[in-house]
Length: 146
Image (tube, rainbow, N blue to C red; front, side, top):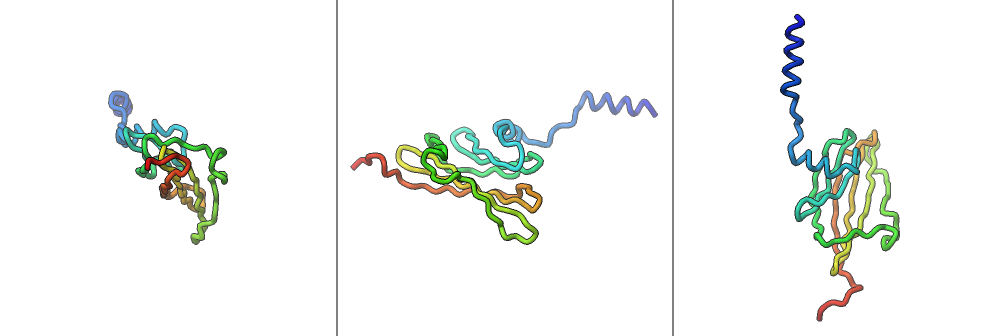
């Protein structure tokens, strides 16, 4: 009876269980170490940006592409954005739940880009969905070529 247990232990030591996470999942987990659970992070992958959302367990819930130029610079909320950028409101869903928003502003030489995150939480406070909205506005504070 003891031999099969020893054999099983040796087998597990020689061939540890493989993670079910894909190489892409592993790379995204590594790049979003500032976001542990119930959160989202904006990550640059090559020449594009994606938002990686994680659920309560820290697993990747969604990956959403964001149309943000590589030269866009983040504007901290204390500089140009008049509100703190975070609001909470009841979602009106039966059984509870909330929707929270976060707004981030970016600028390029020719435009202002506003990225709004919509976080949907269930009644237990677990992130269950996220949506992203990107709006662009021309900059009026720079001289345009005529």
